[in-house]
Image 1 (cartoon, rainbow, N blue to C red):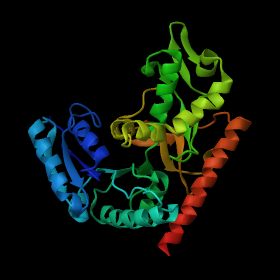
Image 2: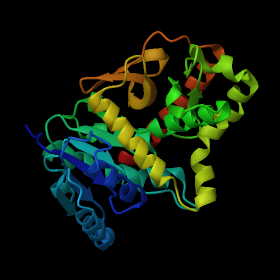
Image 3: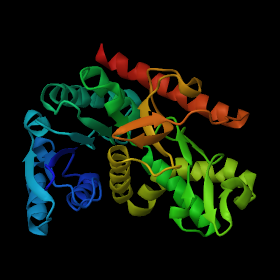
Image 4: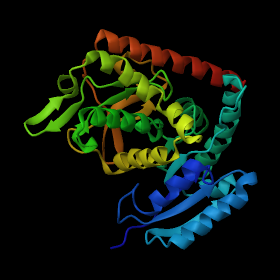
Length: 332
């Protein structure tokens, strides 16, 4: 029997990431090759014409799984009945802008979108926030959509996770699919901590720890970390545009694993609401290693955290607490 279509909202759908993301969703990359979708595309009124162009292209691509398109600048129309919301739209930081300026713009955007999701989305709607500052935008959204369960509001650190996998696979000259269980801890910012202490690589003689194979702790504790932390800036420098393709692809990975489950023995990084695990203050949206099953994520417990890692986990938590205070000050 044919499956019922899933309604997927993409905000900022006429932008770079949206343009890369919507064909991936329509092709089944996000929810699987047999899952029909109806796309809800939202953007701001000045982008209405570009949004209509995206809709035209989706029609022209004749995706078999795409069962309908709602393209609108009306937030209520966009949010009505959605099962999955990918929040790509946000206010980008422009030259000369203070963090507080960006934060106050995003607080007002996420406040209005949260209210629309709260009133009009499907009961068990899953939300992924991509727009920066992603962790704190997700926290604001949670604040103004109290009936959406906190476990259903997440932010994207899968891009950083995938970047870390890519760096290890290049360093060891192995397939990226043979590397697993890196962790991104904390904020999707330059304080995030890419951790390989529990990561392994599949070799002809079984799974081996990444540290044992790389045999270069100096590189792993310095250059590897900064490369992952600053990869977004490096791509902007090279492309003169931000990383749209990899962000779109990792958003699909995040939702696919959340909805369809992670492979046995593999975990992924997701920004989720902290419950105090690993002594991370509760009440922050923080990136943890998680496993997913039956549409639910669960933080991986019991991992050993050495002193070097502890400092990194605390540093990024500190930044998130500051961001949270800044965001809440914009509400008053």
